[in-house]
Length: 94
Image 1 (cartoon, rainbow, N blue to C red):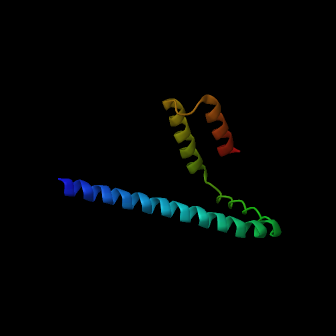
Image 2: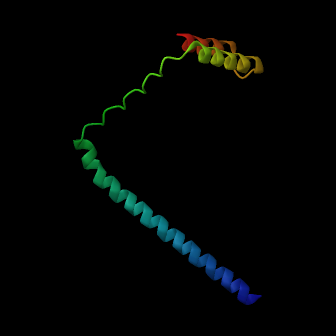
């Protein structure tokens, strides 16, 4: 039993030391990367915003009706309030 405890204690010490060293190395690398990126970030203009998603293809009326039925079901179940239902319906039909 003493040999088992000694082995467990040694493993705990090794694991703790490895974790501490790994954390220190990670912090040091993050600091270096931040220093390298800081001058580049000041010199470069911000990237342009991503383009808006393409407009969906013209929905036929049957898909809109199906979506309205789903919204109605959610409202009846209490998932959507009356205001939320009206807003989603306006977006769908607008």
